[in-house]
Image 1: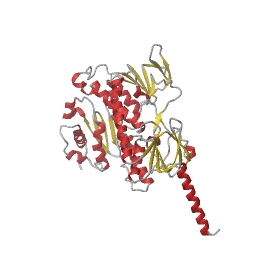
Image 2: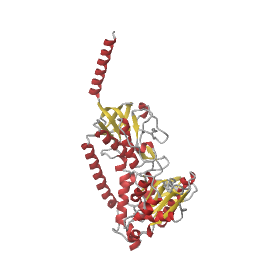
Image 3: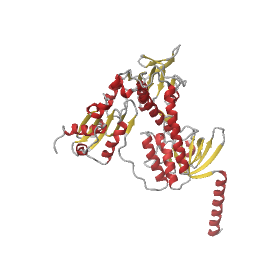
Image 4: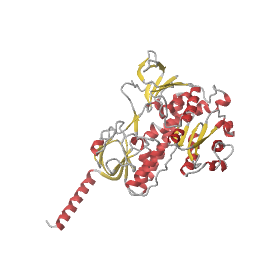
Length: 487
């Protein structure tokens, strides 16, 4: 066979294979598994470049864990609790003040369902507007480019993806020794389906999710006990901030049991649960929330058929471009681990789309804000005081308590503080740490100055609206300036 004939034979063979592929399955330039923050951001970004994109979502509605069981539900419940309980006004009107007496689980869920439906409608409209296809079903790999999707009726659809993004998020860790029943012993996904509010709640695990729900229920005057095997909690947060936060929670009738794991949980006849700790101490609670870790939702993906391995928590390792060990397969969002934030997941999805289709992508800023929607909320950006000390950087701190500001007095804030850290050598801002009302909104001023390499002088010389909580930046900066050596 001549070279010309061989080339013609190869061309015909490839044409036949391509026609065969087209007849047997749909072909997409990008297939995204999961419609959470990273998945939908990647899908929409790729679609804006006229790429053919498919999003696979196992649930009947798009949005992923972020919309249906994680970020939005917990934050909506928090806001509803603060509004109905009158928590923000109790400094003025007393601890017995309520906007609504006899708050029920139904009161909380009514607003939740309205919020989630509105968000789902927005996301569906966004997919339609950008011509992103989506299909409901459970996906698994057949080979590195082929996925099978099984819907609720057992029907199977096969698709080919030139590029594939795994954005399946996480699911609660449910160890065998916890007797989950979906009613009084629950995980963090089940808590949004409560039928009744408990009089007492035990939260096992003092991570972000556990602390958020512990403080939300405490604002409803539910007696809360937090059980944590470690001696500390939220170790990535500045220790001074945690000390202030812990003090406030103890004033709100939250009890901490640090340094003890759970040995057993037993049902109590007549209702409630008895939790036996490793030191044999007993904690009784109407309801138990187990919130000690989450696992990557990858167990049903058949990753081995794609040539990908997951770690012991079913998470996927990626490189700086969010590529897995198989170059055309990416992973982003909670499924790759820390920081597991909706905000950073969105940026990861954008970067995936840019890299997959060889488009320029701006690098994510070095410092991003971390928000914890507890009661009161916390937010932090940059280095903590402990990190600054570990790096051996000469520094000074400035602190403002919210009650020192006029706005704080108007709002009746008896607690809350802002802590700022500056380099003595360069006078640059190194970190901002806030606990109190509006922390997750206020943090963005510090984030901007930090990433723009701003100094102490910006806050000292700048004018802030009066009266605002943002004025705390100037007060904290002046507090540091008064103790810093002259230039």
